[in-house]
Each structure stands twice: as C-alpha cells, then as structure tokens.
Amino acid sequence: MSEFKIFFSKRIKEIIAVGILSFLMILLVQCSHVYQSNVELKNGDLLFVTAKESGLSGAINNVTQKQKTASFDHIGILEKEGHHMFVLHAAPKGGSQKQDLKDFIKDQKEEGQEIIVYRLKPEYQKTISGAIEKANSMLGKPYNFNYILDENSYYCSDFVERAFRDDHIFKLEPMTFIDPKTGKTNTFWEEFYTKKSVKVPEGEPGCNPNGLAGSEKLERINKL
Image (cartoon, rainbow, N blue to C red; front, top):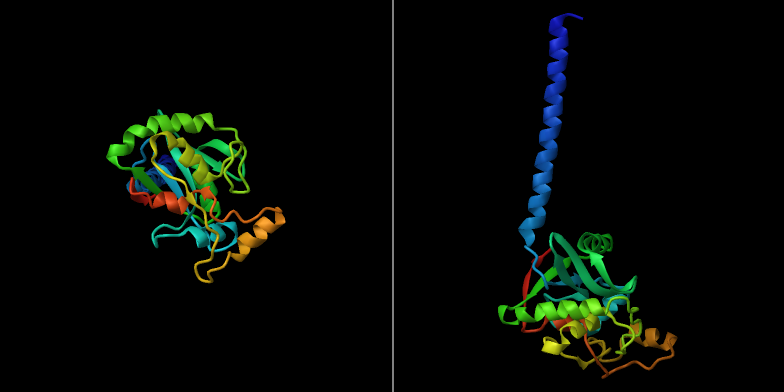
C-alpha cells in the first residue's frame, strides 16, 4: 500500500473517531441540560407522583382530588447528602425506605407516571432538617396496606405528615371514600375493605397526597 493510501486511511479513521466523540459529547450535554432545566432540587423538596386513571391509584385520586392541577397517588421527601440525592418514602414495595433518586425516578417512569416537585415556602424551610431526621428514624417500618393510621406501619402521605408533625406543617383530616359523582362509597374501596373484613374507615383521621399538595405552606415548582 502506498504512503498516500496509508495516510488517507489513517485520516479517515481519525475523522470518524472525532465525529463519534463529538456526537456523544453533544448528546451528553443535551441530556444534562434537559434534566437540569426542569428544576434545581433542594434538600427537603416534596416529590409528588401523578395518579393513574385506574386501579388503586385511580381509586385514591377519585376520592381525594381537590384541585385540577393536583392529581397524585404518592409522595416522598428529597434528602441531599453531598452530591447524592435520595427519596425518603413509604411504598408498597419496600415499605418505609431511603431510595436513590435515580431509582425512584426510574420506577415512576416505568409505570408511566410523572413527578412534580413542591417546596416549602421560605418561612417553613427551617422545619426541613428536623423532618428529615424524623423520616430517617421511621425507615424500616412496613407499608400500611389498610390506610388506617397505626404506629407500626405507614403509607406514603402518612409517612410525610409524621415527618413534619412536630412543626404542624400538615394536618390530619377526616378521610372519605365517597365517590363525588355518585355520592356513595366508591366501589373499589367498598370491595377493598370487604376483602380485608374491615369496615370502610369513613371519617377516620388520615391524609393523602392530594390533601398535602393543597397545603398553603407549599409552592408548586415544576415537573422533574
């Protein structure tokens, strides 16, 4: 092979290599920009997960939705440790846990749900450190599948309300399982509690993601 052909071959390979590297760098920058442009997360941010239209998620939303812009079935507290971010939350899979933010986001995307960030207003930011400390002390407790308050298991909004309870950020309210369209107990919940041989806890104290999202002490930031 002549020196010209050898030089030409090497030059082509160099151009291709540079082109591939440039493409990967552009792609990486674009991906980073998309993530960072939505919202800059802060310690103590509340991550609300949008509700589905059916199943347990839809049933929760059916009897709790108060605002058109708030349609949620799950919530967690963001904790930042240096450059690492975690979500403190109570979920059916894993109970009360501290989950890596990336895994939390992945789980919601796999279910076709979005995450909306809410933040305590400036005058309530001082409560965050205590709430996170309390949330960490509750890790390991099982999930409360009855959604009736007890001290041995927690459901998602219950977990968050308890974390901030000492500072009265949220409040418990009488639960309702009435379908607003029919004025009767939602069929899903009636069957849900019948299977558990438990009376529908209508009027019992409790909380839910939509109720917490409606707190005047929070401000809606953006979609994650």
